[in-house]
Length: 337
View 1 (tube, rainbow, N blue to C red):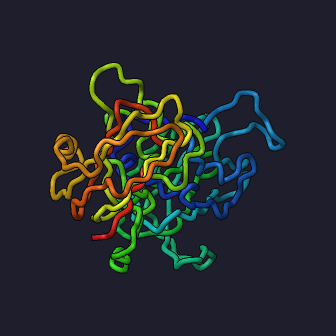
View 2: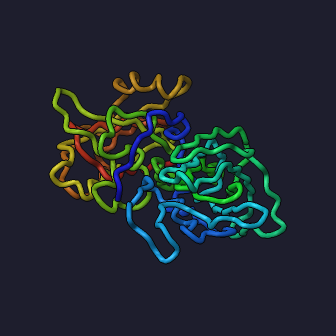
View 3: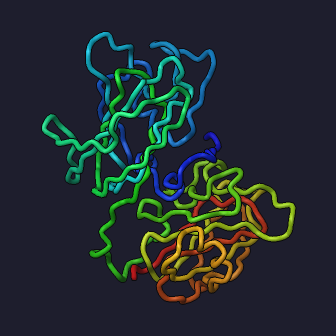
């Protein structure tokens, strides 16, 4: 698994919202007009696109993304993607990394909302949410979206043909909390429920957002890992919960982290009203303790229940690791407030 990279020029929506086109959450590439050179599913790969010189397959040069053949008739190519969750889309990254003489000159995006289990067909009504945009080769194209409706499927159109390395669809999952079981314990830090990372002091080797992904980490690259700390202090990240809730159980999973797991961890939490994400960072140092410092072990699932303080409903949690290191997953189970 390639190490994730942070584009310093990426807009805020790429950090604030979940990628609804992530196959690890259940997104799928369903149908395409053509994917002769490179399959449409490859475009949704969560790892950064790579270029492998000298690698060819039966169709020609192997490319890391979706690539159609050279179109010799009128028209354009398209691909339909089923999102992992119905959600309100905030922005896209249409990434043409490593496509230079074979990228599409333009692209647009349409969307629809279908009932569970339904797939688009000839009668589907599509709504254009990204008008035709000019594209460049080997570039990220960040497009902010102002649509307020929730969608389940997208249609990416490329004019007339070519290759897209990656499609990222950042949005807010649509979760109906009005019918949530108030007595059930729900993972309020789950990305698929709408939780997100507000901020972190360091994510040199692995993104903090990985903590909120489903399942266990597949390897050491699939987790939050900070650089080696050479000064006093500790590393931290702040999680905005998917919904206010009273936390009852904490799971800290250090899967695959052995010579580099944190020595200890703790949690602070608060019910925040007003302000912005950036304004929380200083405040979070003074939040009440949710979980006092706990000793951690390598490559282990740590479950804490009796140690979790009764703070009432909270909206945000600060996860502290001492002094540094890597954690695969963080689960925060609570009752919806």
